[in-house]
Image (cartoon, rainbow, N blue to C red; front, side):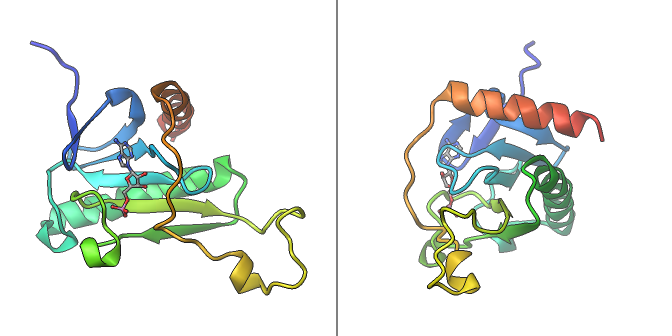
Length: 154
Ligand code: AMW
């Protein structure tokens, strides 16, 4: 029997090369269209659509997994803050019908992005609904390899 793990993300079958961390109830994968470097997703293993569908154990495990992954990625990306976000339902912007926490490491805007006329809040605005372009599996697998090795050391 094959021991290759299967991961569902709504209707998508996730290539295990995208998955860099897992527990018996949750898994973390790199994003096909990251909003910023380090924008990863943490999901329950069970194919649950809405946050309210999760059991207490799944909810605890999901957030503990997000805490572990977020802490490591903040330091890896030399960031100084983290955004954790769930779009729970289509009217909240959910496009994949499987619960997922977005983690986005954040840092101060670089000098190129630093427009002196904009206030700090405006510069740091994060649009979760913006459409980025799809990455290749090679790009995603390489990123996941780096995070896997980082998380294997904790
Ligand atoms: W939502 O708009 O539902 O809060 O976010 C869905 C996220 O899932 C987006 O960031 C999108 O890039 C990502 N995504 C969609 N399909 C895949 C996939 N096959 N592998 C990884 N990430 C995906």
